[in-house]
Length: 140
Image (cartoon, rainbow, N blue to C red; front, side, top):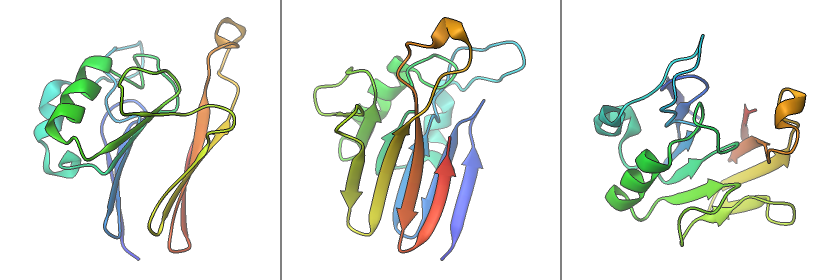
């Protein structure tokens, strides 16, 4: 099975595997020392066109932009959004008891991880195992 991975900024990626297009932390807009950030033009890049699933490990600005997520949701309303914090009425909220999501041959399994540093110990943070027809991709 062919897998294409395109990096956006910081830890963000767009993954195309089979017929599925999955974004993971693909829209960070807060630039941190040593990390890059994405801008709104990323939504026009062919690698980031028409996602089916927009996933976030946590809601910090170096992994997530509420503004760009809202734009993506308006542009591609059929895409499912997965995030530990509720921002959209139609999103899936990742939380204990709500960690596994299926779409045909695709399974998204979120699992709790500690966030780096004592300062962020209480921040909900998740890793993600993406499975498509026996092909596993780990995003943590």
